[in-house]
Image (tube, rainbow, N blue to C red):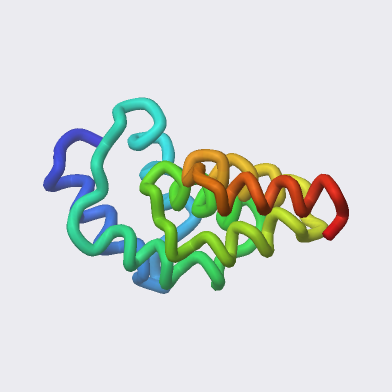
Length: 116
């Protein structure tokens, strides 16, 4: 992913059901992790809308991206994934929550540790 314009084009495709959303989320995650790319306008809302519909590794990548982008509105979904049965999604949700940080994330980890 080269520049801000290309990133914006990619984000536009994020909620297009004919596009491979998992690959798009993966590319965005890589761009954020490696290059600290700031999300363009509308990207956070698109990711939030897409997150409940993804499955497996795609959902995990989206959970990580939500954390990178400090998407507070994704916190309930991340907490649900953290407590879920899917180990890779749970790990990704933990990473997302850790990146969100704060007392709410600490409480979610404490609840998980104590079985609440």
